[in-house]
Image (cartoon, rainbow, N blue to C red; front, side):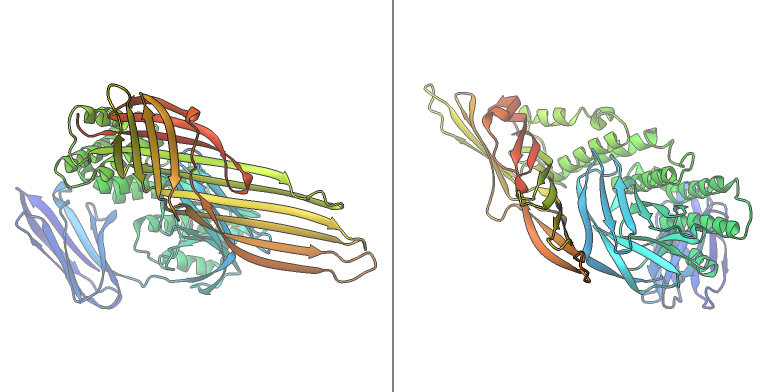
Length: 625
C-alpha cells in the first residue's frame, strides 16, 4: 500500500510526503504532479494483474474512493479536481483482491413478473417446490417511472465461493436497476431454521460483486432490503466462511457498507450461538457505519453535485437507498433523514432544471430531453414530499413554461410539442367450470399498461371554408416506451366415479417494457370535437411474453392405486395496447387552434374480457404565436 499527502499552501499544491509499501507482496509506485490549474495528478505504475484502488482522506482514519481501474498496461493517471475544496488531502493506492464470481442457474418455469409504479409500488411472489416462499414488495415513491420487473428462482450455483449447509436465492430483472429507496425481499421457510446461522448475500447480474448484505431474521423468515438489482439470497453459514465473506473486499462503497452491516449482524448471531447475551448497542453501531458511509463517501461530493446534475441524481438514489435500508432494518433513523427536502437537495434539483433549460437554449439537447428532465424533477419532488419543483426554483411551472410557447418561440423545441400519458389496470374473477357436473373451477386474471410520451410529431390539416364552416384535424405521432403486465390463475377439481379426485392448476404471468407505435387523432368542426381516435399501427402493440405452468394431480381411487401427476409448460404472448374511446369521455381544459389540453377517463374491455378503467391525459401546443 502507498500513501501520499497533499495540502494547499498559499494557493499552491505541494507534495508533503510519500511512503511506499508493498501490496499483496508486489511493490508499485504512486507519484504526483500538479497540472496547469494546480490540481494533483496522481499516477500509479508498476501494476501487476488485477484491479487497483485510489482512495483519499482528510484525517487518515476515514477514507473515500476516488477511482479504481484494472492494471491494464501497468499504469494509470487520475486528476483529482476536487482536492482544492478539501484542504490537506492524504492519498493511498492499493491492489484489490480478485472479485468473487458466482454462476447462478435459474428455472425458466419459476418466474414472477409485474409492474412497479410510483403511485402504488408493486409486488412479486414465488413459491418453490420445497415450499420456500419469496415475496418482494416495493412501496410507493421508490421509482420515478413505471418499470416492468421479473423475479426468477435460482435452483443451483455452478460456482459459489463458500460451502453452505443451505442456500436459496432469486435474480431480478432489469439487471442493475436502482431504486429511489429500497424494496423488501421476504423469504419464508416451511420449517424453523437455526436462524443465528443465517446470513444473506447479493451479487450482480454477471455474477460479479458478490457480497453479504444486511437482513432481519427470525426462526423461519428472513427480510432483506434491496436497493438495486440483480441477485439476492440467504443461507446457513459456518462461522469461518461467514468471516471470510465479510472480509472480502468489493470495489463498491455501497456494497462495502452493506458488507460491514452484514458482518456486524453475523458476529452478533455467532455470539448468541455461543450463549452470550445480545448486545444493547447493536443498532447504534450499524447507524454509525451508515453515518460513516454518508459522511465520507457521499457528503464530500455534495458541493460538486450542485453543479453536476448527473452526479446529484446518483447521490440522491444512494441517500434514499440508505434511508430505506435503515427503516427496513428497524434502525431509529438513517443518516440522510435530514437531507431530504433540505436546501442542498433543493439546490440539486434547481441546478438540474437550470442546466437543462440552458442546454436547450444553446441547442445542445432536444425538446424530449428537456421535457423528461422537467417531468423527472416534478416526480422527484413528489417522491421527496415537496411541492412544484420548477416553482420552488423560481422557474414558474411546467405548464407555465409550455404556455410561453403561445407567445414566443421556445428554443430547441419543434413546431408542435407536448406530452401524453396513459394508464389502465383491471382484474376479473369468474367460474370456469362451464356448468359441468362434479367440476368446480375458479379463475382470475389481471392486466395493466402505462406510459408517458413526448409528442413525436403533430400534423394539422385545416379543411375550413370560412365563413361557412371550419374543420381541423390534429394527428399526433407517438412512440412511447410502455410497461405492461398480464397474469392469470385457475384452480379446478373433478370427482371421479371411482372415488379419486383430479386437481388442476394453471398459472400464467409475464411483464415487459417496450415501444408502442401509436397515432392519436382529434377532429374539430365549427369549434366542436366530432371525432377522437387512438390507433395502434400494425405490430405496434406491446408484446408481453408469458409463461404458463399447468399441473395436474390425480388421487388414487377408493379401490387403491398409485395415482398420477403431470406438469406442462407453455409459452405464449399477450398483446397490450390502448384502444379508441368515445367522444363523450373526453374533457378539455384547453381547446384553441394552437393548444389542446385535457383528460379522458373511461373503461374498456381488454384481454380475457377484463374491464380496464383507463386514464388519458394530453397537453400539447404550437411553438410560437
